Picture (cartoon, rainbow, N blue to C red):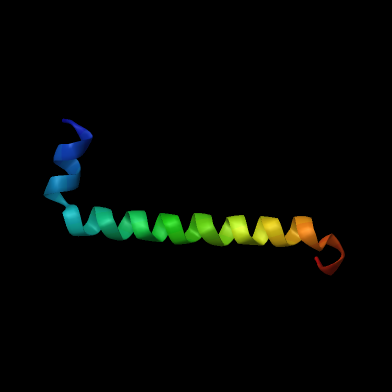
Length: 42
């Protein structure tokens, strides 16, 4: 089964999962940049 078929079958769930993963990754990136910029605050 190809990845495209999985996305088409559960389109809404897959999109929600991808959005949650993107928000989590962005939050982690922002946190890591903040720690690099001001390490004394953490």
